Amino acid sequence: MNFLCTILGVRRQGKSTLALAVACARSKSIIVFDPNRQYTSLPWSGVDPEVIENALSEDEFLLVVRPDAATLVEDWHILAETLWSWHDYALVIDEASELQTAGWRDEWLDRYIRQAPDDVSLIMTTHRAVDLAKLSRALSSDLFVFRTRQESDLKVLESEFPEIRTDVIRDLPMYHVLHYWVDYGGIGRNNLWDKPREWYIDITGKREREGENCRAFIDQRELAIAG
Image (cartoon, rainbow, N blue to C red; front, side):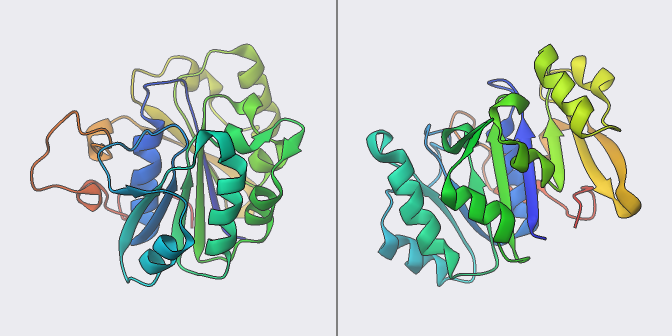
């Protein structure tokens, strides 16, 4: 099974930043599908298969792909089909609720969730657990949850991830996040990430951090990311 990471939280908690940090920990080759233009400080392109394939041919790259709002799903299909024959990369889908609901999954998203190769990491962000298709939650190898107090979301998490610490999630400070994953033997594990500066990445250009880039914030030995 491929690495499928889901990141949940309300606006301005750090979902998009954390998604890129996790992607950096997983691969040197990263594609970000950015429908809401969150990654404004990073180089970006439209959905151009030639540009995407040129990036994929490099040993190391970070490419932000911005779909057109009017053709978001169609642009996602172009990106997904272009990527499908390639290997060894991390794909971030920001605002993944654009491609799924509780009762519907986009066909290409479904294919990635079910069939992506082991060397492809898929990282999704969205605001609420109830925004996701049940399959997305069921097949997530890792779950990161920022402070959540919506009862419907907490009930979904408690039902589908029995060992998750919803008591911790309710009262998390700003930018802190609970990492939950299923360990060997099917045992659920919880790890509190309470040092947000360790995974901070300036994705908006609002803060100068001279001489640093995303990989400077991540040491894979320090992060309990399953797999």
